[in-house]
Length: 49
Image 1: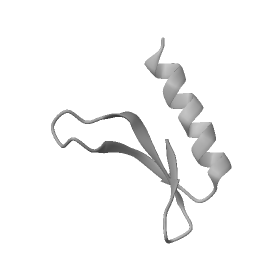
Image 2: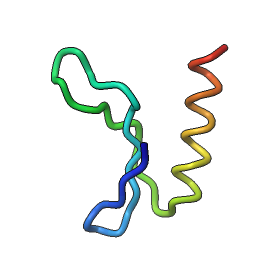
Image 3: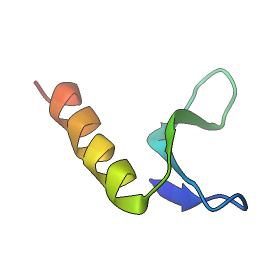
Image 4: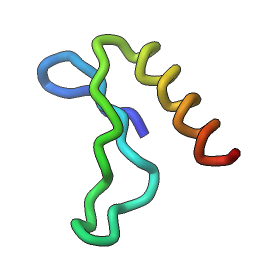
């Protein structure tokens, strides 16, 4: 899940909620949406190996 921040950057959040904090885990902050989408694909690849 990618959200745009007020600063103009994009942040990648986990799809599931963290059981301890009940919030989504931050998986990185990126300058462009394309970078965030690329990283999201990389994360999904390793999750499903």
